[in-house]
Length: 449
View 1 (cartoon, rainbow, N blue to C red):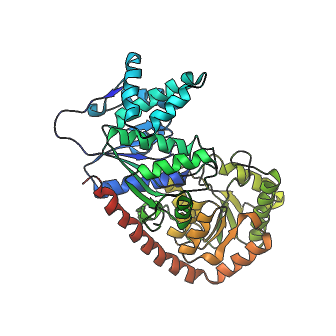
View 2: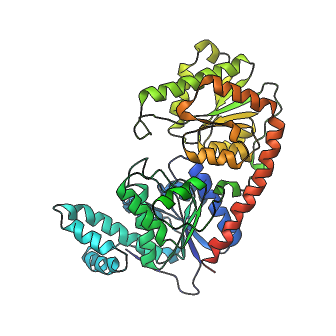
View 3: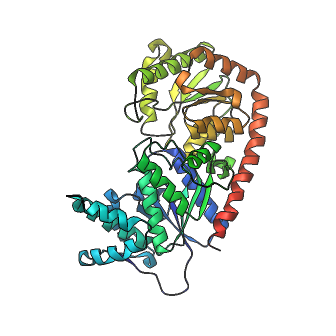
């Protein structure tokens, strides 16, 4: 594969990288926030996306998009090439005869890679696995040679606890090294880190971070995680990228006033075998029972319950399990519904219609607080505790590991009594957080003049 630039003055090109296209609206929101920042700070730049599902990303955001992983690289690159209206980014297939020559030149420019590849090639049968990856590395380097900045958009990219070291850690290391070999600047913008448990995962993450040109992290827990790896950190934590999203009222489908108080419940597949490393059926069922009992308690108090997802594939399954655990007579009252959420705008509209929220997912908390909704956080990681504390809501965060019905009921009643004060605090903190999060873009875009 080779890339050809059009004749004439060089255009500024920025590649926004995110694990988007997987129905996770938190990741999509962070990606969208960085795209908005590019438009504000570098309005004439050409933007491309690097995502899990390039076709989805291209359709959703109206930009050319390329695959993160080689499993989709051939089809993704070919499809994007056929539909491209920008000839300056035209992609030519790589000739198989030139692969080894190009690869030898390539690895000389990538720190420590030459040694690693020689060791791997010494192992029997490894070559057949390496060749497709080598081809993909050559593809992405040719793409990145046409790009001035590779910007990784927020989210919890720096971890190995979900899919191991060969997923997020290796992918970020690979793209970082390819960018450095291509002479492209690399920025980790407001990323989250941890847990990182494997030796290989720690090595991949450390190398990727050390070789990047710009860093900002979304919470103190992420900074502490990287410090434990021996990474020097010289920046303070910056609020989540989603705080910089522009959400005018025109985006929100406001609903008429209602008499019933509406409580939104945002679950997560905690300890579910579909998602969780070291899953425990007993722990998952306990979590489902507590939320089902809590929903029944809300209904007994004359409130309406609306379940809503922020991960559109996994969360609806949990919602189904919770509703199945509830009393059938209660379900038939019509006071229990599930919000129709397909996009970030849908999510905002759903939360806007609620009076209170109980959220387990990180961005379920973020959006609730941005929309000034009193929220109880059921936290499964320190990032949730950090966020609630930063927003002045430390009294309303509960540990998912020790969640009990009586405690969540008590905190909810306390929140009801203080709701006006909570809204004022959320409004003030959100304004402050947006200012701090916006300020990081000055340093980011200074990388490319």
